[in-house]
Image 1: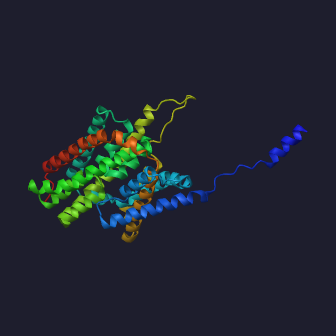
Image 2: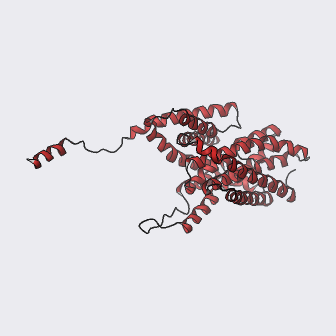
Image 3: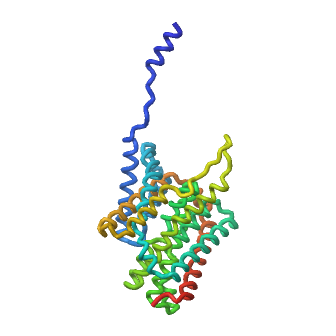
Length: 349
């Protein structure tokens, strides 16, 4: 009888099923809507990145109690899948020939100043007691390309959501200050417009901010500013690869004696490089590139909203002062080294 009763219970028990893919749709729809809001704000104020708008809205939703459990599957997918796809599509913004046309001198200045800023920022972060992941993300955002670099590096840094939000907040504040200061300082120093454009591209954090500065100064400044900035963006792939290789060497064994080894070149970095190579062939129509660049921005904005909804604002606030000081040190090094180097190699008209 007992066996028969047990059999009836088992028979009535529901059969476990895999989560339906449709479960991700509501959360994805919310993330997509927020990404469109960020894009709209960007159209009204070009220096404001859609990603910044999205992550702030995500933090606000979590802090004000707007987060709902039904959002979780879609936002989880957005924070990973959409993020990596957006990084791959960023590669379509880069044309190798445009970067090479800068000449060996300016390229060398960009590489050296980025390396110096990245190393100094990480060192200052350690001295100020920042979490290693936070220092790494701030250093990458300051030296490479703002929020995009932060989220790209976090794929191998394994930082918490709070680390990402803190780093993005730092590069946003400092990038805005550079947006205001660099043009004025350039004119005060008597630099020509082309050299100001080179300096802006080498020292300002967000692509949109660089475009705003270059456009305000003139056509010559805009062209050089954007190309130099994209040269910095191109350094994201080798930098992520170097960090991933370092993490492989220093990985600690798990409980079963195995080592957790991230790939030397994560697949999204490979995709980024392939996209850059494809764009460099010149076979892609300009209209398609423009459209795909907009799609990349929307994907990254949706991912940033997802990241923001999982952030505890109190944790971010506790480390924001030290993180801002860390980023400021790196920003000063980047701006000083890049301007000194450009003057040394005789860049500008």
